[in-house]
Image 1: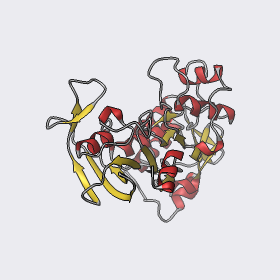
Image 2: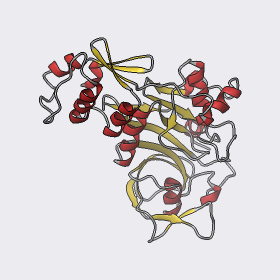
Image 3: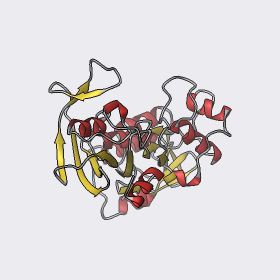
Image 4: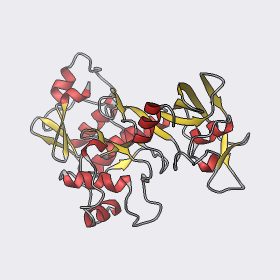
Length: 325
């Protein structure tokens, strides 16, 4: 409901309080002592009303109030929701500004974008974030350069990650409000990530649930393994195609453990093609055959479910097309 009465103007989110309150779907008298504000009401009263109405996260509203980020602008409440990042203090933007011509995103890499969210299609081989300060060629830096090119350098931050060699959609928040809401959605498992993988061999069951806890491999620091003392891990799978000794499998995570798909598929005897770390053959593909097919998440303002598909990478298209890979 709130999205009908909220508009962005520069750094501010303007909320048409009067029309919102008169909406028949608006809950009347949200809490004792939270008088409905009107033009000219003190920001303290507006904050109390916002908190009682549960329109936004309480921590975000209190933070805005502490920095003077709640103001009346005409007959609307202004919330400082879109402050520009400090290009000198923000490490990512400082690096992006110094190399603005590098690693520019192609238009087709932007799968979804609005004032709150950005979804980028990560290529296999590109890391989401830097493993050491100053590392270039990351998706995070590409996101910053993209916003710089638009003249809208918001504080963009990734909400989840993909392994370097996994392709597919990565979700970014473009302000603090979106980050709080999307982080919460991740904790509540309201962000769905659906993958496609090419695995070795033919699975006995066309679909199933892999329920096997995952922990660190004490013999190999880079690996994870199924272990009784590990963290709970659930992966649903469904075979969508069978090729020459290879199965194309659609997978959905119910938990988000490190290397979960790779560990689980190797555990049941069907490692990902190209995944040498977990027993996959590399003669036909030099990287793990894993692609994020679709990302679904609740929009941080409206709560509506946003579905963002990602196009198949060339290796997957070719594999399915010729059926002899």
